[in-house]
Structure formats: C-alpha cells, structure tokens
Length: 393
Image (tube, rainbow, N blue to C red; front, side, top):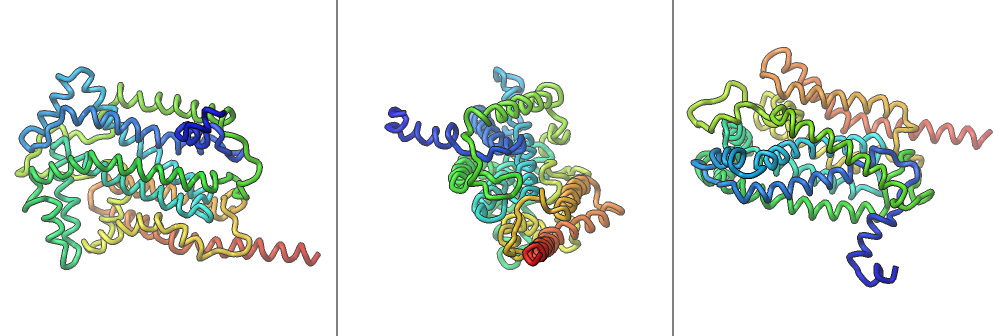
C-alpha cells in the first residue's frame, strides 16, 4: 500500500480499477463501458499499424489498401480487425446508450457523464465517416461527395464550407489528405474525452439499476465485478472473431472493392450501417436544409436529454425504469423505432419507405421532446399523490 501511495499513477489505477466502489446490484449491462474502452484501444493500435502502410493519395490509396491486404504480413488481419472493429465499437456504444436510457443514467447528478458520452459518440461518427473515405472505393468517394454536400444547405456560408471541407471544388486529393489527417488525430481526442468521461463518472459513481441513491450499498470493483467484465470481454472477442475470420465483409458494402470513379455513380448510395438511422431521418424531410437540421437535431436531442428530463422534474423524481411502467413500455417503442429507422436508411427513397421513415422520425422526436418530460410529470405526480394519501392515512 505504501508503494501505491508513493506512485501517483499506481494510485490512480488503484482508485479507478481496483478499489472503485460500485453498486452491489449492477449487472452485465454495466460492462459495456469498459468494452467501449477496449474497442477504442483496439482501433488506435490497428489504426497506427495501418497508417504505416497506407498512402493518402487518390492514385495510390486503393492500391495501398490492396497492398496491405495481400503483401503485408498479417495485413489482412489488421485491416479486418480495424474495419469490423469500428462496427463493434458502435454496437457496444449504442447498447451502452440504450442502457443509459433504460436506467435513467442521464438524470442528475450524472448530467455531465451523459453529455460527455454523447460527445464521444459524435467524435466516433466523425472519425468513422472519414475512415470510410480512406479506402477510396466507389462507396467511399460517393459517400464523401453526398455527405459533404449536405453542408451546402447551410445559408450564406454553406458553399464556402463545402469548398473548405473538400480543399477545392470537388472531392479530390486534398479531401483525402485532410480526412486521413483528421481520422488519425480524432481517436486521440476521443481518448482524452473518454478520460474526462471516466473522471466525472467516478465523482458520483455508477448509476444504480434501481434508480435509488447509489452512494450506499457499494463494494469494491475488484475482486467482485472484474469477473463480470472479464466474461464480457470473452463473449465480445468470440463475437468479434466470427466477423473477422468468417464474415469480414458482411458489414461493409461490396461497391467499395471497386476503385473510385467520379464518372460512374452507384445506383444506391448508402453510408455504413451505424449511420443509417440518422440517414433515414435526413431523407424523411423533403427539404434539404430541413433534413440536415433534423439529422443534427436527432443527435442534439440525446446531448441535451439531461436538460429535457428536468422539464418533468418533481420532488419524487425516479431515475430507473424499474418503478416506471409507462416509461419501460415506451422505451421498447423507441428501441424498435431506432431499428426501423436503420432499416429505412438502407432502402431506396420510394413508397412505402418514405412514409414509414417519416412516421418513425416523428415518433423519435416526440419521444425525446414530449413523451419523456410528460411521463416524468405524470409518474412523479402519481407518486406524490399516493404518498400524500399514505401520509393522511
């Protein structure tokens, strides 16, 4: 113990990993936070290895990726781990976010924890988009063209902003170089924000599944909970290994194995699967500017959710859905709604997908902007009313 106290680094590790007090009733869903950290480490390590062999030039980018796959020792493994690791990262983070929604982890006093977590997701989306452009296949080129063109809908500065993103008048070599530089830099910024996320998390501790005060009934993380995380790591690696070794391209698009050609437009341009729900919201609005605003607003809703939840704050605010039957019921609606939006995002813009996407988009915004605060007011009023009846009795 004296050695740990003298060494500040060991003391930090000891406080954050070994002696970290955790609620005694947390379950395996709480392991997805550490899994997200593991995914980030995997992405950074494999990304550094790939950067050693990648050439950010429009004439050589596609060939350098093929060189990595065919000529570099275990280059195929490194690339498949990195490409599928991005999908694994988003799967883990999305589950982590839905767990937070279900158990009310965005409520006070953990507002900063939630908002820093959503910030990490935003940085992940930017990093993943830029990384998708780097192989310089057909879907990379046209995906970059379509998505960056969205910024042209911004009044006054839209056209200049798009030219700045491109570094010219079209998606070309300057664009590829910029995206490569930012794609290499952003994971380290994510690591910094993740550190802040951990620091503010440890200030108040993990949320209790029951939604009650989590400062009581705590036990140290080691040796009680590290086993749950270890089992989660093992299951995750088995799941991850299946995609890497048996189906490495199932989560990608086959058109990206065709070199980028500005003269040939793919029949159906779609982003990676983890962008599809937001892409569906974008396409559900008939106006270009309105679609861009709706897409960004869908993420802002998550970011400011702690502030929205305060609209329904009452003296008997309950965080978890364990004692909120209406909230629990509607939670599964927003979960299914998100899956529907993901499915719609992968379909062509034609009936009946347009109507389904618009209905799903409306429900998405209603859930965060009206249903959540309304339910909080209703359920807190019921609890307050019942408690008064008990006191009178």
